[in-house]
Image 1: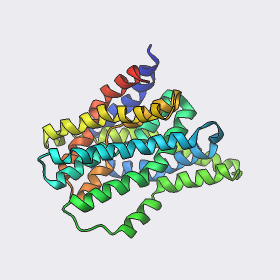
Image 2: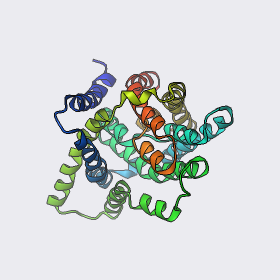
Image 3: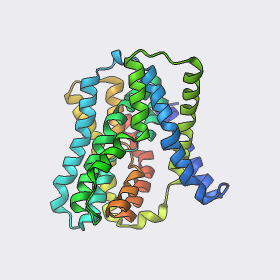
Length: 304
């Protein structure tokens, strides 16, 4: 069987099981929110810590690779801002369009990176997550501060929340252990590894449980535009920048996957908090997650 399909089917299969579980009402509806928070904020930091603390960073061209990834996120932001004058939509809705094209579901791509490339894919995606969380959040908050309907943001509070994000803290501690050659007691390391192994199945189940087809009825034409930009233009932006900087092999494919990622649930939360178009954000999260089942295999077959 095609190795791409072999790697992708288990990931997308678990997402589908998450959708089935929510539809079956095996668990109370109210339980999925806490499960998602546990996976993202409780277990994922352990996964990132394990990935980074065990990684052989000497074999990765960190400077060029990280520069390409950050330029990809900046490029998507610039592209979305450039088309604003041509869009006849309310400003709050534009902020949600910006989030739709600028954010990515790093933990979903982490699962794909591991499935496709093992430890190398895991560490490359983890490194992009560390750098992109502050950058993308600052971009989105700035756009909402200018065009959202909410109150002016308190930047000191926002910066504090970003720096104390459990994903950032887990990654930073992993980097300190790695670069400082700090030995961990075996029992501690195994405990953290075990917690990290529980993260991805719960994350994928939560992605499936979060699919909301009713939400896709909000602004369907604009939804089509944002999904097209995110899933069809985004991969070309990241891949093109990587190629221009001389990146090849697995790192280039990881950049491609980063650009091909669906939107993130955090877009909906921030739209609610800062006066964006929350119903449109909810629709985009579902639509991009559904269509990425088609576009990610397509891009891997064409450019991967």
